[in-house]
Length: 82
Image 1: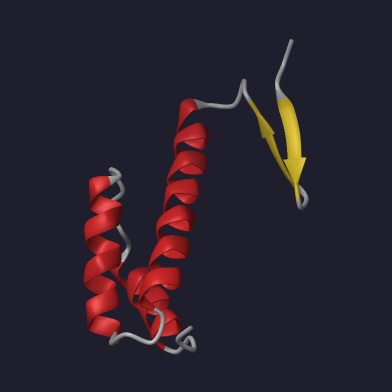
Image 2 (image 1 turned 180 degrees about the vertical axis):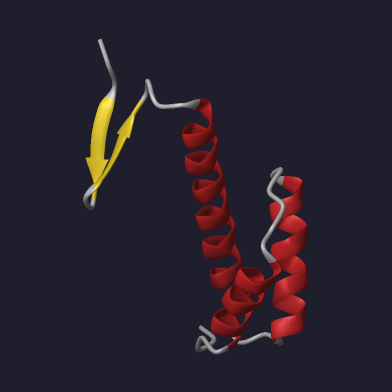
């Protein structure tokens, strides 16, 4: 029996290589951390947000891509505060 599901046109098969599963886990961790930081630090300085993202991602075992990290930080900094 094979586990298979699809999300927005992307499919996941449990029999895929371990590299694919690892990539899937990393993407989920990045999404989780960015979502948390966006809720907590919206409107804060981008440098502060980038540091927070970097620290949280490293604690979850993800080595962040600096360019993407800075893009996330800039977008979160531009969000309206609640």
